[in-house]
Image 1 (cartoon, rainbow, N blue to C red):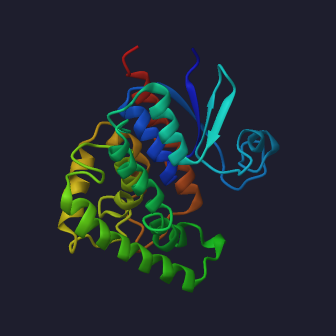
Image 2: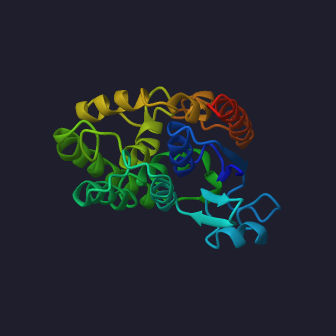
Length: 250
């Protein structure tokens, strides 16, 4: 059986969520670097890639043995869990699963705004994200963090209950990237429950490997990294990822 292929780049938040789940579950895979927005042969707008994912987004997975392909990180997380019976992270009990699904739906126009309002403006000046859009995204993120602090994480250790689930993988790649140890773009001092959860998530298997790209880039609050530095960090992180996969038990 050929290993799953994951198309993307380590710097991508949704790509990291999928890679982290696979590492956590010790499922071998191959990551193929693909350039977001590029029409070149290794780009997401190239016809070959669009045939796999018409939306031209990352992450995208491909099962070489069957030819099955799928885009959208949360759909991928759920599919892999269903496909391989990973019921610990995606429970089969309807109410428990509903709590996970509730967060995955909440995520898109709430915690995902961390990338639009804080990260993207620093590293993708070419996108020319309007200041009003950035301000709105930061406001939405602030409200979402307060909801997590006062409700989701005030009631349980993890987002959907006492056990680690897909909700936590999805949320951490957005929130965790903002910590002082990575990009240093968010003050978490007002959020003790979130800080406790962040510390718990750092101890989840695969955390260090999947976040190697952020550790290499370092803080970007004062100076944005060049595209060459980001490319170099992605390539280096890919090597780290492949080394971890090679160490998996056969």
